[in-house]
Length: 139
Image 1 (cartoon, rainbow, N blue to C red):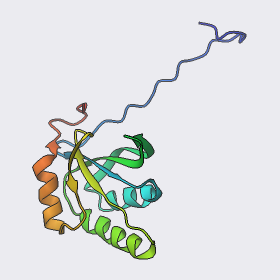
Image 2: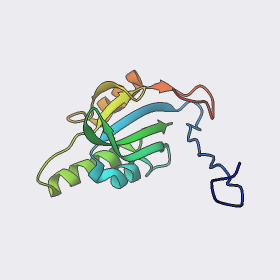
Image 3: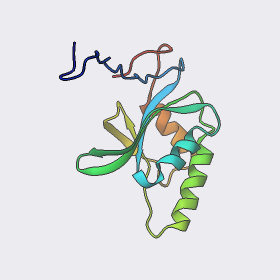
């Protein structure tokens, strides 16, 4: 197929499809403020037992600008780093922010604010689902 006035064919771009890769990983979504996207992503991926398999620095959902993190985690050792960053960021800024847990990317499971590390881990395990196979597609 020729692209209007070009004499050479254009090659269609094949989008890269990000999917969870870790077998038996907990799959969940975190949403927070766009301002701290890089720092939150770094905190999640800091220990190696969790990774953001899809992240959006600025998404508009229900009229609000949010940062979106779809996470797969085989362990929860990243939670202390996430909470440490969160506490430091709130000390340094005039306004606080929240990190919320969603399942299936749409269903609010709860907020991580005010929870201990053990309660946050229990909340994630209670509401998140586990990846059945490596490379399995998530709806």
